Length: 535
Ligand code: OOB
Image 1: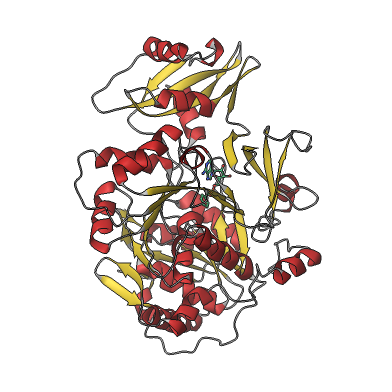
Image 2 (image 1 turned 90 degrees about the horizontal axis):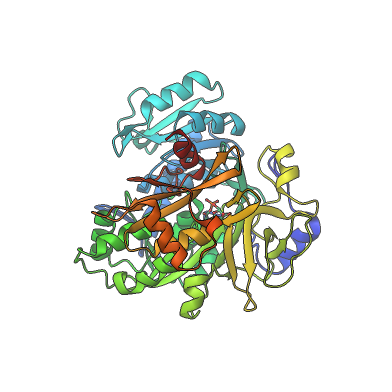
C-alpha cells in the first residue's frame, strides 16, 4: 500500500475479501464494465453535451494516454479541482486507469487549502478549469506553481493560457500502460469534512471505494433507469460515491451534472432530463422548499431526495413530500467511510427522525462514553466504527491518527449518536455541539429544532460565546423568513411556552442574511462563532 497509509490487518483483509465486500476490481470498472455490457446507454449529461458509456470509456482511455505522455505515472498524486463538468469524470477515470491518485479539491477551496494539500500529498500535477462561476483558477495555478516545487504539470479545461489545455491532452499520441492498478492500492484521496482546521487526506482503496459505491447504490434502490442529478459538488464523497455518480454508473444509470445547486438551475434540469434521484445538504433543502412555493416546474419524475451532511430537522423533513412530491431518504455518512441510509421501506417517523442503518453487516459500530465504555442501549455515545470501507488512518498523519483511531482500529467520528431498539441511528450532535453554560449543557440541536418551528424563522444556528462568568453563553443566529423580523423576548417567550428550561434560552439573538459556510455549504460553526464574538 502507498506509504503513509495504514492498511487493514490481514485477518480483516481475508474477511472482507471472503465475504465479497472487496471484489478485487479497479474502481474504474464501474465505467469499463458498463461500457462492455451496455455501450450505448447514456452515461453522462453536461448541458448540451452527452456521452454513452462507450464514448465516456473511450474518452477516459485517450485522456489516460495523454496524461501518461505528460509524465504522470502510477502512484503519483494529482490535485484535481474541477466543478460539476464532464471533464471531472474523464480526468478521474483517466487517472484511475493509470494508477495515479486524484486528490479531490473542492471548487470552493482557495490558496490556503490548495497549498496545504499540494504539500502534504506531494502532488506532481494540478488539473483545474480556466474560470468557473466568476472565479479565475489560473492565478491560483500560478501561485501553486511558484510556491510548490513538486508541481510539474498544470492542466486546465478551457483557455489554459501558459498551461497545458486538457483538450490538447486528447491529441497527444502515446499509449497508456495496460497493467491495471492493484485493487488493494489507494485509488483516490478524499478531503476530511471537518469544520475546523485544514482538511486531512483520506486514502480510499479501489476495493473499499467500489464497495462503498456499489452497496450505497443498492441501499438507495438505484438501477439502470436511475437518472441522478449531481447537484452538490461531485468532488465530495456524498455526490461522488455515496451512491452519487459512481454508484449510478455501477448500475448503468445516467448522471446529469448540475453546475450549481440553486433551485432555478436544478428544477429546470429535473424537468428537462426527467431526473429520478438527487442528493442535497439540509440548508439547500430549505432553499428548494422555499422556492417551490412559487415555482411551477414539473418535478414529477423525481422519486427520491437523499439528504445528508448535517442533521436534517424533522420539521423540514415533513415538508419535502408535500412540496417536492418525492420521497426522502436520509443519509448519514463520512468521507472516512461509514454510510447509513434510512431503509427504502421505513415508516414516516423513521424517515423523519433517524439517520438510518449502516450499509453492511460488517460495519462494526460502537457507541461509547468518554472512557470508551459502551453506553447502555438507547443512550447517546460517541460513534466509533470500523468496517470494509472505513479507513484505518489518515494519509501521512501518524500523530493525529493516534487520537482519531482506537488501538483496535476504530475511527472516532466525534458524532454523538443514539441507537434505537430498531437498530436505526439518530445523530444527536457533535461532541462539541453542546454549549456548556456554567456547567449546564445546552444541546444545540434541540433548541435549533424548536426554534425552526417558529413561523418567522427560516433557519437557525445556536452558537456558544465565551463568557467570563459562565464559561459560555448562547447566541441564536437566525435567518428570518422574508419580510419577518424578530426580537429576543419573543423568541424566548416562544421557547418557554414549549417548556424549555430557562438556562437553555438564548442569551443573545443575532439576525443574519446568510451563514458562513464550509466549502461544501454546511454551516461553518467556527466562523459563525467568530462572527458573533466580533459583533
Ligand atoms: C458527509 O461527509 P463529510 O466527511 O463531509 O462529513 C462527515 C460528518 C459526520 O461525521 C457528521 O458529523 C456529519 O458530517 N453528518 C451528519 C449527517 N451526515 C453527515 N450529521 C447529521 N446527520 C446526517 N445525515 O457529510 C457525507 C458523506 C457521505 C454521505 C453523506 C454525507
